[in-house]
Image (cartoon, rainbow, N blue to C red; front, side):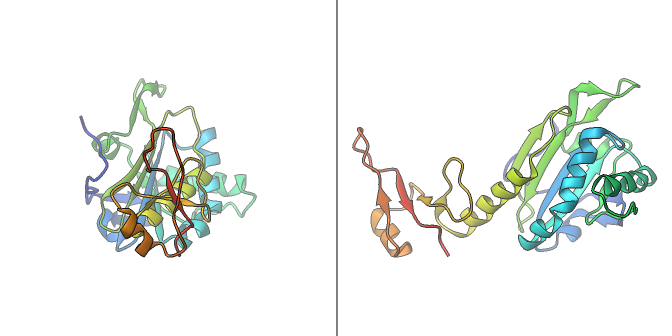
Length: 224
């Protein structure tokens, strides 16, 4: 079945966008990247999502994340839609957003990446693109995949939180527990011995006592 699995390398596709033609790997460069798809231009939920994404563009930039969207309409429609998105944000209704939108009117890229929602169809009976979130690392490999149906809008604050976790755990030998937020305690990964943990985390490691007697719940402060 077409689509991407965690650890897969992103295809180096060419595409027309609202910022001109791109080749995906060159667009990403050495940065992290987020690709988020949308069912269709001039639709209500998509407009609110892209408006929120535009407002959060500085937060993604702080994290060295290149942003790019995809929708199954052409560039001219995208540019016209951008005016509505900016107006929704109470900004000047220009054709520019802080990130490009890929034109995929033939749905070729949506099919290749496994983005179509079989239950949501347009007036012609064609399947719409689901709300997919792909996060790629600097190695161009897929680090996160979230799939929402066309009827449910995404939470971009949660997407930023997950990216913070991905970037932290890629650099440090830790994992982030339930409801973790930047600055909270983190967990020492199971593959690290107690001796190794003491050396890596001089601030100390706290182990929670459990009825099983197994010492796998090990916490440490947020690594610098």
